[in-house]
Length: 242
Image (cartoon, rainbow, N blue to C red; front, side, top):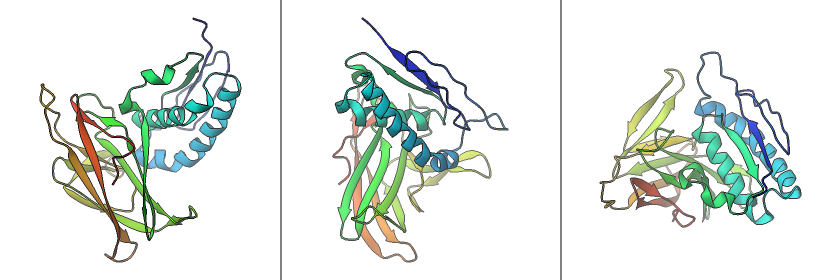
């Protein structure tokens, strides 16, 4: 099969070398030699998404992916961005069905639910397994916007009946467990639970969200994320947020 490929390797400074027929790049570690922290990734994400959208225009123009694959390709690249701590490879090949081989645990999933107070947005992954994950749990990030798409200040009260939440402590440089309930401003953190039994039996897991006013406990809206048992972990789809 004829194949055309290009690659870009991400680094802490997001230095990029691009070749549309073939390509190479470099990955830079920070001073401690560690991958980027979640706070680093969150700060860089808006600029990175702008770049990805511009790159998607180019790869579609060159025939490397179809216009219909654009959104799936973007979600896969953003998933890889978080899974690999800012490092990784942006790759596209002239190969029909390329994205069909992408693992769901490597792809970002964007969910929305509309309230009277605004629109809740949740970024997570399409799947999570404690036995096969580079992240310490299922990524969870939330925000609230107006109907016009303008950001609204709020807090999110997360709760779960099984498993537990964990967050990244930048001062200590480690992941810290925070229990079955956690309140934050929506910034990324994680949910994790023990893997399913070998026979794949297991019940759905549910994560509850309460959107709170920025400076009070007034509840602006409620939602629930449903995780479906899948293999040794759980999967999510576009209907997971209710």
